[in-house]
Image: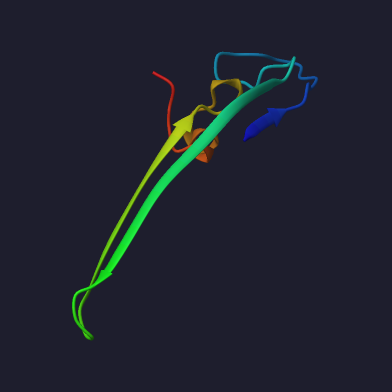
Length: 72
């Protein structure tokens, strides 16, 4: 899946600003789910997920949470 930010006009630009030319970044989520009924009254469930990618314009803070992963 791709996230896309269209180009925009801004009177200022800084290291934490959106890129004025726009940006597109890929994101991926991989999940594994497993369940097992041990008895009629006891079950076991295992759930793990991995989120990969980065926010558009190297987003940080709340904007970076859209991918679950931050760029180092």
